[in-house]
Structures are given as structure tokens and as C-alpha cells.
Image (cartoon, rainbow, N blue to C red; front, side, top):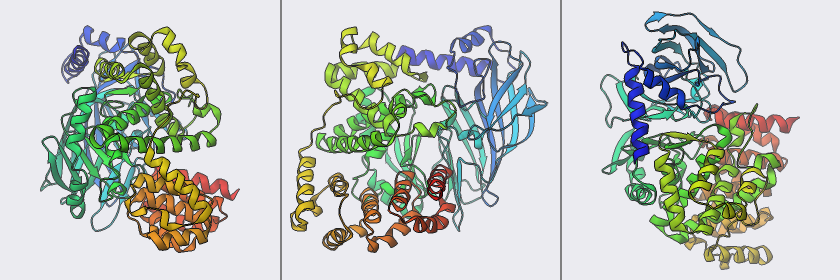
Amino acid sequence: MKHLALALAVLSACMQACAPGNERSERTRLMIAQTKLASDPHSWSRPNEARVTRLHWDASVDMKAHTIRAVATYGVVNVNGANEIVFDTRDLNIEEVRVNGEIQPFTLGDARPFIGAPLRIAIPADSCEVAVRYATSPDAAALLWVDGDKPFLFSQSQAILARTWLPCQDSPGVRIPYTARVQVPAGLLALMSAENPRDKSPDGVYTFRMDQPVPSYLMALAVGDVAFREIGPRTGVYAVPDLADVAAAEFSDLEAMVAAAEQLYGPYAWGRYDLLVLPAAFPFGGMENPRLTFATPTILAGDKSLVSLVAHELAHSWSGNLVTNSTWNDFWLNEGFTVYFEMRIMEAVYGKDQSEMLALLARQDLDATLLELPGDDTHLKLDLNGRDPDDGMTDIAYNKGYFFLRMVEEKVGRQRFDTFLKAYFTEHAFQVMDTEQFLTYLRARLLTEAEYTALRVDEWVYAPGLPDNAPLVGSQRMQRVDFLATGWLQQHNNTEIPWSTWSYQERYRFLSLISSASAADLATLDKSFAITATTNSEVLFKWLELSILAHYGPAYARAEEFLCEVGRRKFVLPLYEAMVNSGQLEMAKRIYSRARPGYHAVTALSVDELLTEAEQ
């Protein structure tokens, strides 16, 4: 744990040296300068010249106007005598800047698509504090405002959307601790990726503290009428009151998951691990905000069948949150490790049978993605210069990364690989990592040169496609599903399908394998198993996709209802694609005109692009 202690010592020294009224010490300046960061093509900031070291955020949330007015006060280290510090912004109204308490002129550069505009602030050599007073736009891309009797607000900052609600050095390499004071309307609870309250404040004022340094994409805010349910001594769940008990039951194994993760790769470093179940408009399955994972309600299946998503977000507490990709070109270091860790947690808590079925579905998704993407986008190490980093958030980072790590584990042995990974997380805690640094560490601490070459590591990382030494997934249950799917396509005999006893993975696999089914075929399945009425969102999604492609009309009403209620991009985008690909563009446009106002920008922009291209 000496590396963790060193990281925390550096953090403490930086905070003390940059506190108002204190001079920076030369030692602290040198420590900051020595932690040189990679150049980030998705950030205007130049942290190797002048870097933020801490943040206090004082904010007022206007739920009716859909805006946040705030003052962001940063401690700053001038690393090498720079004459300015640069922040990332996008669609922010910058009202005033102060340096060491004095009003200071600033310049806001020209905005670029998805990157936004640089905020440049002159600083003296001894500056320690920069405060920016600003207001967000009602259309801030990171924020979704859900109106109604019980309004709700949530943020989604990954990859580079934090700059739409906070001027920041918006690169994953820049990690800082923060405190906050947030004013919200009475009757609502405010939560952040920090130490959180459990009860509503009568005056709507909440204070927060995150002592561990985090990158800006892990800054998170949610405001709504939610209640808390304790699960274990360091775990719990927040949800709207009507769902609180349901969510607590669904996630009752949360404490066991944390314990299983610690057994694998060392102590949990963030204090508490809580979940917040968000409105269905949330664009992802989950977001690994430290201390408070944001989760979609679509994983509330009633039988814990979809809790692998929770295992995934928990795993990020090590891979991603503790050791973070240096830039978004190295995104696989966050997600490939996390999928691997997720599978290990699921195996430890629910057994090898469950984890192997999940692994087989991961391979199925990966194979489909490999057919869709151009070769360069199937490398683990990406070159996203000039592109939205969202382009790199595909199954390549997640599942090719997972199978690479699984391949290494199977070749060197699990015990040896676990020892390596535990050391990796411990020695690089609260640090950033790029692909080349990781490969150097891999060669120094795990693989001999002969093993490195024999495993074709560079081919996995820098070449397209999937090498033919990829691990094979073994699941007898899934083999049986494959056999039955082949037979069903030939005979359409529903009596041989044990639908009622199948897990969601088996049902999903079966539906994936009968893509040639006609509308009449689907009608017989629906009559036998009432699939259109299923409450499992994964199975429902695959069924609706199949129904749209086959023009199975009785499922259309459910598809429209689903698309107007759920904003999870993983489900939404493929369903609109199915309409486009099956010649039903007008239906897609009609449904989208209803649904779009309820989608987060992450989802809406993807569907916008799809439908625009379809009309050309």
C-alpha cells in the first residue's frame, strides 16, 4: 500500500499548499510538475503548464428554468511559470472571473463542435486560487431535466460533457478532490459523486465532500424526490419512494459484491458504495460515479437477473476510478478491465454458469461489432484525434478488452494473473495510465518476452479484428439453446422450447439466433410465451428489434411505449435502426418526434445522426 500512501500524501500536500493565504512550496510545485500528463486531443486545457488541484463548487439549481448558477473556485498550481490557465467550457455563460479574490479579465475562444470553447484566464506566477462565476445553458448536453409534479435532474458527464455544466480541465488525466454547496428547491434531495445525505434538508441546502481526487467526467449531480434504503454497513440504494423497496430487494446482494471484489483486488478505496436509480431517460445502463453509481431502472427485473450491470459499475471503483485511462484513446483500459472484473465478481457471487453465459453474450455482441466497424476502430488503442470520444465507446473497448485479459489469464494461470492485477491497482491508485505504460508494466511484472510474443499482445492492441487465439467460452446451457434454436427454425415447434425455465441470458440468446423468423413465426411464439408482455428489458429489447425487422405489428404499440419511456441508448438506437433498415422510416420519425424531448443528449444526438443519414 506504499504507492497509495504516496498518492494521498501528494494530494494532501497540494491541497495545503494551494489553500487561500498560503504560499506554494517549491516541493509541491515540483511534485505537480513531475506528474506530467499526456497531451489530450479532446481538451483545450494545458495542465502541464498550469493545473487545478482542488475545487469548491457553490451552486443554485433552478428546476423551472433548467439552469444552474454557480461559482467554481479552484486551487491552481502554476507548474512552469505560465501566464495563463485554460479551462474547457461548452455553452456556459461566463459572468465573472477572480484571481486571488481580484476581478480578472478573461477571454473565451471560438467554440468547436463537441469540444466547446477555451476559457483563458491570466494568472501571476504565485496565483493559488481562481474563481469563475457562471450559468449553464438550459440545453447543457450533460444535464437532463425531467419536468412534472416531481421534477428530476441528473448529469451524465462522460466522456467530455462535464464542461457543459462546469468550467474545468476536462481531461481524464486531471484528478482533483472537491467540496460543494448546492441549493435546490425544498422537498428535493441533492446527491453528488461524494459523501451524500440520506435525508432531505428543510431549506434545500446540501454540502458535499469528495476527499479522493477524481477526474471531471466523474463529477455528478442528481436532484429529485428520492428516498434511501440501507442494504449493508457501507451500501445502500436511493430511488423514488415508490421504487425504493423494490430497488433494495433487487440489489440485496450489493454488500456481497463489494466483499467479493475486495477479495480479488484489494480494499475498496471510496468509503461507501451506493446506487441511485434514475428515471428511465438515463442514457446508459449505469455510470460509475465514485461512491454513487447512477443506474437505469431498466435493470429492475424483479429477479436479480440483470445485476451484472451493478457488478460492472462496482468494478469501475478499481478499473477506471482508481486507475484511469490517460486519454480517451486508452478507453479500453477502463472498460476492458472492468468487464473482466465484472465477470469475476459474477462468478464469485452467482457461479461460473452465470458468468460464462454472460461471457458468451459478450462474444456475440463483439462479433457483431467487428462486422460493423472499420478496421482502425477495432484496435484496442484508438486514435480519436478530431473525433468525438463517444465514437470509441463500443464493444471493442469493453469486450475485445475483456477477451484480451481473459486470454492472458488463461495462458499464465489465474493465481499469477490475480497477483499481477492486485499489484497493478495498488501501485497505480489515483493515477492515470496509458496503453504503452500498461504494456511496459505487463512485460516487467507478468510476461516474459517470449510469453509476450507468443500471446501476440501487440496484435491484440494495435491491429484490427480479433486474433485467433481468443479464448473460447464454454456454456452447456447456451449450447442447448443453440441446438433448440436451430431446430425451431426448421420445425417451428414451440413445445420444445423451455421458455419458462430459461434465464434471461438463454432467452436473449434464443431470440438472437432466430433473426430470419417471419411475422407469423413470431406470432406463434408470442401466443405461447407472451413475450411482448415481458418485464425483462433485455429480452424485451431483443424481441422488439426482431418484431420490427419482421413487421410483426402486434408488438408495435409496445415498441412505441418502450421508446417513449426508456432513454437508454443501447436499446433506443438499435430499435430506430431496425425501423430504418426495414423500410419503416416514417414510423421511426413519428415515434421519435414524441420521444426525443425525454432523451438525454447522448441518446438524442445518436438518433439525430441516424435519421438524418436515412433521409439523405
